[in-house]
Image (tube, rainbow, N blue to C red; front, side, top):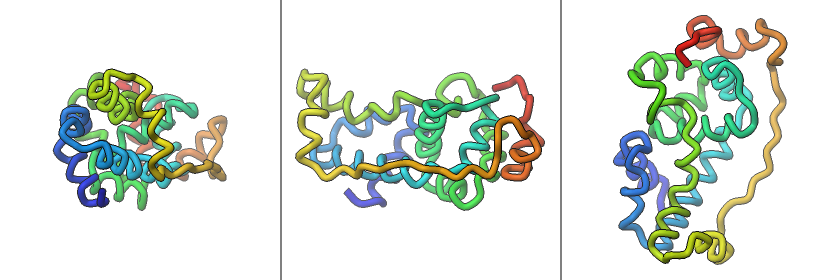
Length: 175
């Protein structure tokens, strides 16, 4: 699967709302190709400035929460994703545009990470099919390390990393 096809599927999924439906017609090989790109984009978005934005907007953000935030970020589409990689503070505008931050728009979407597994499980009747066959495909395995420029005990350090997001969303009870 090409990167272009990956992003086309993401765009058609309506910010992840219909991701499983979009993946259902794909072959097994295409599903693992999609998963390859999913893992890749999860890896390159593991950045301290994006974590700072998630921390501010969500009122705190641990390891799992940051994973779920990155799944949500990928589902926002290519333009939002790449803009956020270049300038995490650009997400301030994205949050301002969202109308309902409690449901499908809430900036944590854990279930998106399981879409390929769910489709394959439904197709085969075996919930573990993905795990039994993933070794047949070359999925990237990444290790994650971050050097933080901010500290959750130091508001000024967070403000320096994402000033616009901090000013608008710090202490905001909406999220």
